[in-house]
Image 1 (cartoon, rainbow, N blue to C red):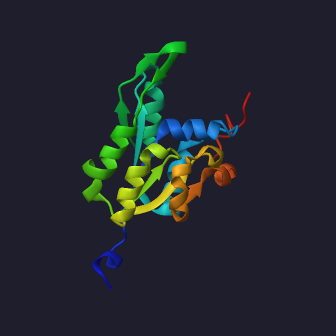
Image 2: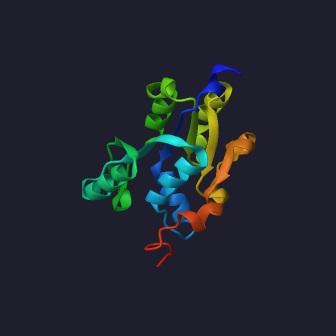
Image 3: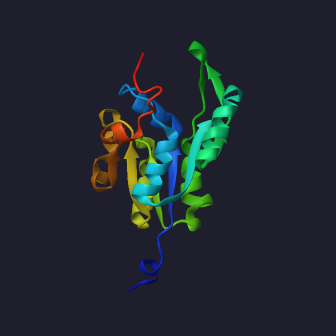
Length: 172
């Protein structure tokens, strides 16, 4: 028995919040973040969850609620772009945390995103035997770059009943 099998593996999750949010909403439902945190702990034994998002002052109470559910929030400054939208691209921070900042603190990683921009991270984690799963919010919009990671993929489409926010589960 090797040393890894003697102890319970430490599993961390790294979440691209925009990809997660937009992915499930495009399918017509809203994610219950409290249920999702429990799902990650129950299904994958995740002990630490990093949620990467752009900081917008008016959502401060939401951020407090997410922290109370057990998420560690990593904020990216946002910029205003045309059409009155706010953008906070978190990709670099997520890759940095998973591959450097937190790398020595976990045995296995889960990345929540169907974005091909994380291909290099998936490859890196896989080659170091640290990739446990790639949770894809919307199978219809996953990047074709993820084909080679088929054995790691988990689709949230199939977990809708378990994770839907009942107060906002349907599109209006």
